[in-house]
Image 1 (cartoon, rainbow, N blue to C red):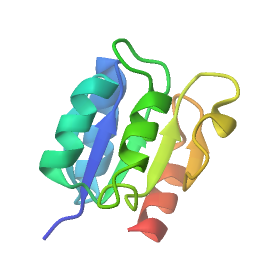
Image 2 (tube, rainbow, N blue to C red; image 1 turned 90 degrees about the vertical axis):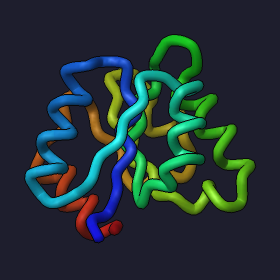
Image 3 (cartoon, rainbow, N blue to C red; image 1 turned 90 degrees about the horizontal axis):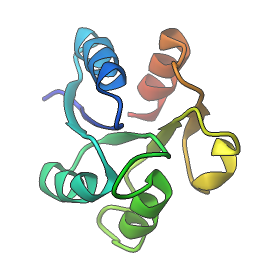
Image 4 (cartoon, one colour; image 1 turned 45 degrees about the vertical axis):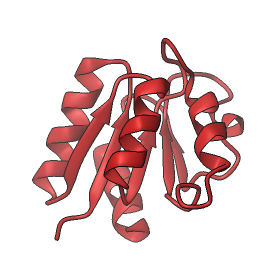
Length: 116
């Protein structure tokens, strides 16, 4: 069974890019375009890893992180921040890695493979 990655980003181009990148490597993908939608998706889909943008409408990536961090079942899911926001390395305390947009595909896949 393929490992599942949840892509949380408000930019359609980034979602499509990451979906193609991850699918080509054999991962299953699901996506959400804001933090509110992402909470529902993460509860329903139980992904193996999350890529998280920080600046989004309706709910920020940081707010999403705080919500799932309180849930004992969900707070163990590894998170990789992919964002153009400055200070992105400080926004979410427990991340596997932090990348600026657009992420280097080889480096991103290397981190994902070593994590899941």
